[in-house]
Length: 123
Figure 1 (cartoon, helix red, strand yellow):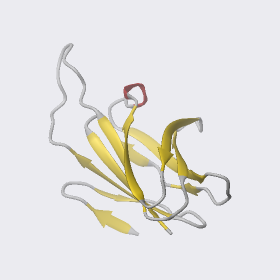
Figure 2 (cartoon, helix red, strand yellow):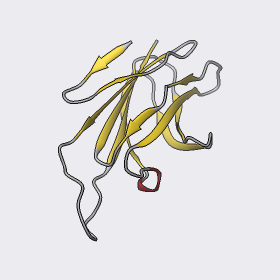
Figure 3 (cartoon, rainbow, N blue to C red):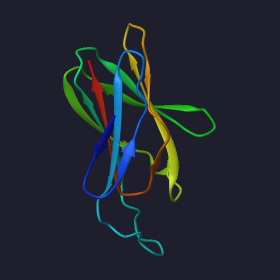
């Protein structure tokens, strides 16, 4: 499955029971020099299924960090913690059903500060 946003194309793998499509777009902000703030980075979960899910970031070392709860049939936006983004950083995501089986995983996605990653969970 391939989804395209304005500037960047991304491809993600499919989970066993749920499809996770990933896209990223850069919000147009340039990296700031010196002590200026770093732009925020977000992930938007478009949960098109009815099952509620816990969303996790999986770092390259395999460690997981919970982002939060994504309700069924809803869109939820989370800020990706700044301490996880170092230049162009490879991250993966998982969506674990609450009270069920069939976690879905994305492929590794390269994310930079200021990007917005969109994950779509299909029923």
